[in-house]
Image 1 (spheres, rainbow over the protein chains, first blue to last red):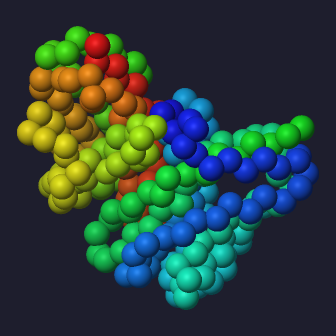
Image 2: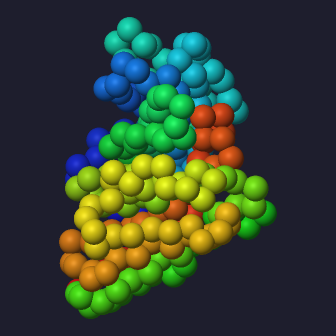
Length: 112
Length: 114
């Protein structure tokens, strides 16, 4: 995709370590948050979501944490693998419409 | 399920030409979103439909862009006339209930206008 470039923050992690990707959102009215993974040449892929009435949600090897006080979202990936290398986007939504706004993305590089 | 299908995968056209991008939704989904991705702006929502009706087209750059859903499973995004600054990767995504499940994206169309 067109997302790879000098403008993206990059996180480099050793294979097997845990990764933490952070996201600050801007809209206090947002009540639904999603993390997406985008591999090179592909569209974003849904990873995990969380509603604003929760502060933590776990999936397979991934955990999303939500801190509404400081408008902060994080994605934790346990035992990072080379296949986790991608750009990760957080997205926020609000209201009754099925519409979300994407953040700028973080590039995760896994070092074998 | 084949997922969201976009065509073409790559399009190279000359400035001033008409470009039509196509998207087939996942069967049963009722929402359709067109996004544009560039290095400078990231992922931008252009327009989205719910049950074939355009709900929000505030992201459409200008009148040169138009989108349609002639039926519940298919959508087109047209640029006429195209300009070099339209070069980007265009994604469509479909959803049954975005708030619960998130979107399913297609693989995108890489558009280059020369």
